[in-house]
Structures are given as structure tokens and as C-alpha cells.
Length: 160
Length: 160
DNA sequence: CATTTGTTTTGAGTAATTCAAAACAATTCG
DNA sequence: CGAATTGTTTTGAATTACTCAAAACAAATG
Image (cartoon, rainbow over all chains, first blue to last red):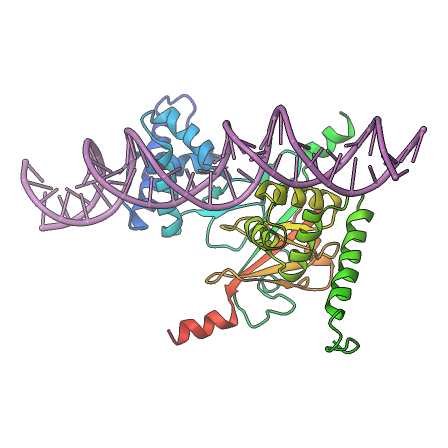
């Protein structure tokens, strides 16, 4: 927000356009065709990371009313294969998606309100790939989910 | 197998009875009524940890033909609440159950054949509850799933 | 602009799990 | 020991999240 002039009423539009260009670029460079549903999903995912297919469907539909839920699933599947989004499946939840890929970050989930946040790897890099005894496995990934009460739910629980 | 005499045909029966007694005790001390489906589920889970509801249904049905799948879900739900079994939900899999509870052990899953093994906590005790930045959360549990190729699948992949 | 290839829509299907009411069985208490 | 109570299982149906397939359609290529 340092460069754009708030009195310039086209600023938002230009930003959106620039943003759309960036989104389109990342879709294109993943080897996928750039389509309206794909742009809309990617934009929604930028604004609301850790969304499920249904939430994205809701967000996309407001821009692009004709879109089907199956299209969302299709978009997410292609994005997943292309490495453009990451899918997480916390216990008891439907699948959630995020754009932050390529780093091995983890997640912390509130057991009360189900909000999800990113957390970086616990201790540097190594322990995330080092079980005590790998039992002959060739370990490729480690997934960590922390469970607890978020700050807000701690307050709500204390003062009901 | 050191004390029982193989020529004693009642040994198996007595063992089974003793076992049933232990199983019944653990159900009772969890504050639950001891029923045939519950005993059967607990026994099946002893023999085949990391089973899903359907596999347990299959195992239980061979002993106790009238049992319904919904009974299995009911038994597992009550066992879960009572702290008698632990439920794990690896991404892409149905829920799996195990009797090993109360320690914070983790799991390693084969990406090819989906076999699941227990693994102890990566480094002692602490890091499993210590994210880099807990973001104000009151962290209560950490769940780790390692993904990789099991020994057998490494062989199968090398010599197809 | 026509072709090709890939994407989305439409419509249907499935797997895993949950819900609810009635039938039934384990424990409790007289 | 038998009746009452409480909890469990059966039966039957519903739901959620997701997948599959064919036809309609749109983006990229030349």
C-alpha cells in the first residue's frame, strides 16, 4: 500500500489486473490452461488459505455464478498434481487447500473452532524427517499437526 | 508359548478365556458394559492394529455373525470416548483404530501399499509438543505421520 | 480462424460415516 | 433370583465429501 494513490479510482482495478496476471502466470507456468474457474480458485485460495472445496465453491460462485462444484474439485486436483496447491486433511475435517507449497511447514488446528494456521517446522529441518526407528521405510515426508485451543477459544472458554 | 503344553487341548481355550477375562476387565474398568460385540472388536484390534471399521466388521462377523456394521461404529465410538482405543485418520484413508493409547507415539504409512506401523516420538518427548511458534495456541497434542515406501514395496519397485 | 487438446458442465454413483427409533441385553437393586 | 433400569445393538435411512463419465465447451497452437 505504499505506492498506490487511494484517490486514483482505477488503482484497485489495476492491482486486480496485475494480480490476475500473476495468477495467470503461475497457472500457465505449471503447464495448465488459464481459465476463469482456475483464476477464481487461485484468487480465493490467496485470500482464504486452508479452505475446503465447498468454501472455495462459495467464494468462486460469487464472481463466476455458472461454476459447478465438480469444477472446483477438478481445478484443485489439477493444481495439486501441478504442485500449485497443497492439500491437507486434518482428522475429522474435509480436505483443505493452500497455496503455500514447497516448504515443509506444518499446521496447528483449534479443537474448538477448527481454525487452521501454518507453523514452521518444529526444530530446524532434520527432525521432521527422522523417526526414532524408520522400520526399513524410505521416508519421504513428515506431516505434523498440532492440536490445541486457539487464543480466542481460550478466552471464550474462560468467560462463557 | 513356554509354559503351555501343546498336548493339552484345553490350553488354547483357557488362554482364550483368560484373554477374554482381561478384555472384559478393561471394558468394565472403562465404565462400559461388557458385550459380545465389544469383546470381539477389542480382540480383533489386538490381533490387527490399524484396522478400519470395515476390516473389524469382517473379523468380528466370523465369530459373531449377527453383528452389524453400525454396531462396530458404535463400539469404536464408545471405546474412543472411554480412552480404550485411539483413532487415526491418515490422509486419503478411512479411520484406523488401535489399542495402543496413552503414549504419544506416531505412525509411518507406506504410500504404495498403505501399511501402517507405529513409531516412537522422533526425539524424546519435548519436540512433539513444541511448534516453532504456537501463535497463542494452547497446544495439547502433536500428531506426526511419516510417509514413505515400506521395505517390501522398495523391493517390489526395484524388481517389478 | 480452424484445429487440437484440455477443461467444465451435467448427471449419476460411491464410500465412509452418522442418525434415529425400536428391539434387546447387561447390570443393578429389591 | 427376577424385575427394573440403563445402556447397547439392530434395522433402516440419510448425509457428507468426493469420484466418475460423457457431452458441451473454451484455451492455446499454428
